Amino acid sequence: MDNHNLPERSLGYLTSSMPSMTSRPRCGSSDPSWSGTGGGVALLHAAERRSSRAVISIDGAYARHISDPPPSHAGEDEIRGSGFGRTITAEEFDRISEALPIGPARTNLRRAHRMRADGRFERRPSAEFVLAMSRFAATLEAELTPKELYSAIGCPTLLVCCERGWIQGKPLTHALQCGVNALPAGFPHVEIAWLDSGHMIHWERPRELVEVITAFARRT
Image 1 (cartoon, rainbow, N blue to C red):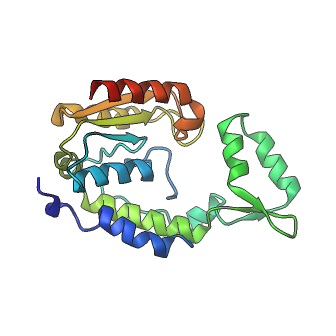
Image 2 (cartoon, helix red, strand yellow):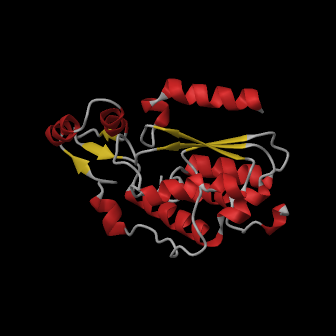
Image 3 (tube, rainbow, N blue to C red):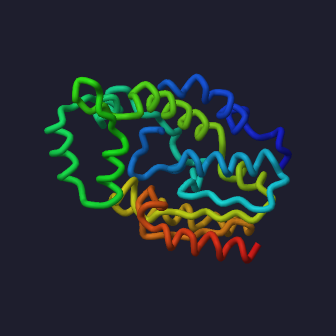
């Protein structure tokens, strides 16, 4: 597949759109078809720059089927309801933090809040940023199929996938896992590696992630 046949809203559109979005990640569901924006960018880069020797996408497998309903972006009410852009007291912050399991989930909560001058904690990123990224991701997914994407990648591709949603989250559905596992049958250059982890694989399974990447690099 020729690079120029990729949808316009691919890597070039993403990079040109980022400056206008930085003042406003995607509000991901527990079962998305393109869960990692960074992993998706890696795949798009390899598709558009065919000089890549190999590509590794960490929790960014794209497996939307052409018959799937068009993706929809999260609305502002849903995003704000998830806590983006909220401000809470120090007491509320401690209560929410202590309710989370010790580990990446609690660490991520602390990293996602900053203490303001008035002593309240503000959730980052802003709701406006999350809404913009959600709209962009839904538009891109509506225009791009796995066949277009993986056919344009002519190098060995490793998709490192998490078995659970977000951070220390619930297991992904069987249907989604089957969709990802079916990719190598249509695209022999694609390999799948599943890790017992949520989206923050680097935090939850750093040793296993390094082992998977090292083994792939040695083979290629």
